[in-house]
Amino acid sequence: MALYAAAAAVLAGVESRQGSIKGLVYSSGFQNVKPLYALVCETRRYSAVLDAVIASAGLLRAEKKLRPHLAKVLVYELLLGKGFRGGGGRWKPVLGRHQARLKAELARLKVHRGVSRNEDLLEVESRPGSASQVPRFVRVNTLKTCCDDVVDYFKRQGFSYQGRASSLDDLRALKGKHFLLDPLLPELLVFPAQTDLHEHPLYQAGHFILQDKASCLPAMLLAAPPGSHVIDACAAPGNKTSHLAALLKNQGKIFAFDLDAKRLASMATLLARAGVSCCELAEEDFLAVSPSDPRYRQVRYILLDPSCSGSGMLTRQLEEPGAGTPSKERLRALAGFQQRALCHALTFPSLQRLVYSTCSLCQEENEDVVRDALQQNPGAFRLVPVLPSWPHRGLGTFPGAEHCLRASPETTFTGGFFIAVIERVEVPSSVSQAEALARDLTPSPAPKRKKRRRKAAAGASTSLGT
Ligand code: SAM
Image (cartoon, rainbow, N blue to C red; front, side, top):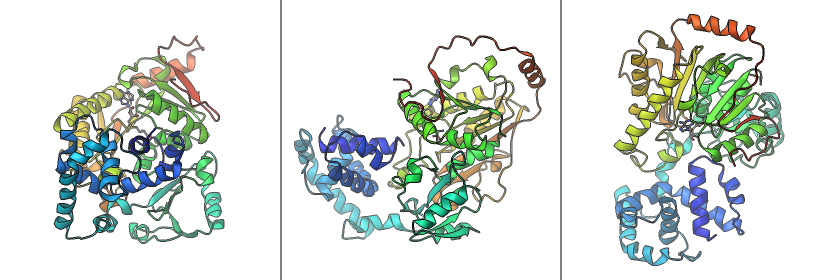
């Protein structure tokens, strides 16, 4: 594969959270990994600038066959890199046609921002509170180790442990080789923003997970005790599932669904590495999972983290303001799915508590979805007020919306996120009936399953769905 196509594939993989740059570079099959790694890192560093230039030059509108990630890599090489050292192939003459316009747009951007050098365009991203300053959060995987052991390991490696942070300001002030314990989450270590731990032996061994603090809240707020049966409705690539399993101490059961076989395959690897043994993965549309299936009779907890626009993701926020905003049509389609998924989840008969989360900043995917689902089930469910000290709350678009949580680099020093915790108002009689049934039932042969299922356990293969 040519250098530029390989770099575009790695960029796409990183943005869809399939893995780290290093991991994807090594698994790309590209022989000369060093220039590939450097090109991807540099292209990502200038991602916001490149997006702005490409958009204002109208490159993708003019060249419909040019995919966005490849365009970014090629424009990086043309304007900021070393010219087309990797060949450029059939795209070289195409980019040549747009060269003057692209250069003019870059020059215009510099004038607009009052800078003269390309590197100065990056400065805006290193201001405190910007997305690139969000710390590196390390969730200790308590299925494999404990916080003290991980802290000791880092100390032996020359890091300096500062104890539990008392406020977000402590996190903001983190520098060099210092690290802290998060003030809110008990097993979350915090390192300075640029700390790269993807190659760390403890990460490779599944002793910690690199997971943004906001993304650790859904499993924590679901508060399912060990032994519970839980559905993770849209589960891949599985960070929240592995967190759920750790909180359950691998006791009980997680039914994890996802439609995407590739993402489920990475998830199986992630769960095996994290020592998760209480999870059953299924390549299945959550909307088609039957709430009356006896397998889910004891499911009292559901985590619903559906596909969303990702407008709160740090990678998107690093781009030009507005670049991550989805079109009206896409937003309508996403919100429609989120709405259906939430209403479907609320029909599980034993459900007591549900966490709905997205990494979107759009009201349509967040407060509006929650409001509509509650309106469709009048009096049956309520929003639970959680984390009263959390500074960023849901938009006040309906009474009680302030019980929801929002997160952003500026307010909570995390990625952009939305979380709502929903609880059943009264335990329906069907729960006790279901429980009685569950106790009395003698094991019956498992019903025929339409889709592939697999229990995730240490050593599970990565080939689910293939
Ligand atoms: N909870 C995951 C985590 O923490 O790693 C991230 C989930 S991601 C935001 C949304 C996932 O929903 C994607 O993997 C997508 O394939 C999956 N998905 C989309 N539609 C679905 C459906 N109808 N049923 C099940 N999964 C679905």
